[in-house]
Amino acid sequence: MKNLKKAAALLLALAAASTSLAGCGSSQSGESSAANAENAQASSAGTEGEKEPVTIEFASWYAAEETTADTMYAMIDAFERKYDWITVNVTEYAYNNLSEQLLVRGAGGTAPDVSQVNAGWVASLVEMDVLNSMNDILPEDVLNDFYTSASEGFTYDGQVMAATMIRNPFCMYYNKTLLEKAGYTEDDLTDLSWDKFNQMCKDIAALKTNEDGNVVYGRSLSTALLSGTGYYFYNDLFANHAAYADQDGNITFGSEGTIAAFTQVQDLVKAQAIAPGLEIKENRTLFGNGQVGFHFDIASQKDTFLATSAKGEDFANEIGVAVVPGNVPTFATDHALVCFKQTEHPEECALLIDFLTGPEGMEIYTSNLDAICARSSASEIDYYQNLSPDMKIFQEAASTAEGLNAKSSHYDNAMLLIAEALQRVTINMEDPAAVVTEIDGKMKELYGQN
Image (cartoon, rainbow, N blue to C red; front, top):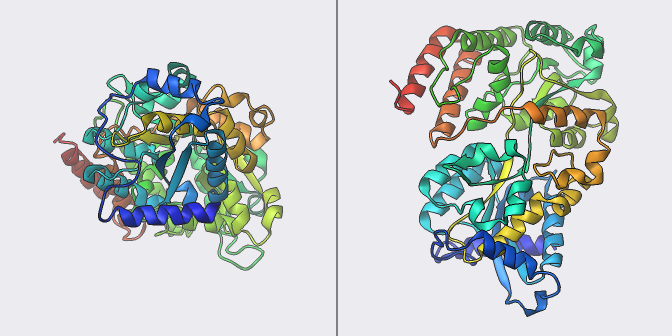
């Protein structure tokens, strides 16, 4: 089934080069309503054979990644069995490519019907006016089933423009073996201050190598020139009571707290406690190899670490999870679904969004992967009633996690500026204060706040 869907997706992509995609057409501009979606769902049971076949395209990075692909296709297969008049053609994209593709295809009139999105991508699509509002396509009871905290980051002028599928609060993974060898216990992670955390990173790096003879680092840090690098630095900023902008969108990057955060990471690089120049995937590999003491990431990545480790499932015994140090809230990079206005099948898109975010879809997802759901009804499935201690930490973090503060199309470029600053401070070893002051000016110019 998976290979057939991959082939269908490839044919669809090739067809897009010369004509519009199947399942997409003229803009619907709000003609589809919540009432239509309710009628589609009410009539779905027992009448599928009477419906005309419908094909919709779903763009997904989960379908392209080794750790999530099988699960994503299992969810799509189950959806197609339930709604047997609907065929979902899955187009796979690498995570780092999907955002740009959605902008290009949205502007060119060849957008997919439904797509996965990161929280930081939605603002640009909203400003392009290429998305259907969830208020227009989802039944009211489904829309109200989403946690308020999960929807508010996607609400523009009272309209919810994306449906959260997975809540992704960042917590701190740690290597128990390295922690112990550096002279610490797990009790030392309780109410851990940021200053003590930085010292622990240095002490772990002082071990030099692990049991396999590989170089050991105290913590991971993403510094590649990618927008994700910017928000992966949020925990460092929050721990120093700093942020790139306030809740009103005013740039506040040039604060003393920001300078302190950059000074700290430069100090850790000098102490060889951080491997500079890496992106998130490379840092995940280092942690999976047992080369990093502390790594900030989302719940689902534990499977990545186990897949990377030569110890396989046994490596799980060496991994622990704790709240982010500094006694401040963490942040969440929610993964959501959007529906494009170009679709000719908003009712079927609504059914897909409802299924993937709701109890049936999350039952399949959590049978293979750890995740925090975004809907009250989904939280009632057995998985959430029997969470492991580590997953309870993620669940609790989700209740206080701050969003990305990404309601501007300038957001990705602002995050790239943070990535630039990190490269200059950790690779070029420039003065943190001077770099922060310069980047603050660039951000304010970007947002028109000079």
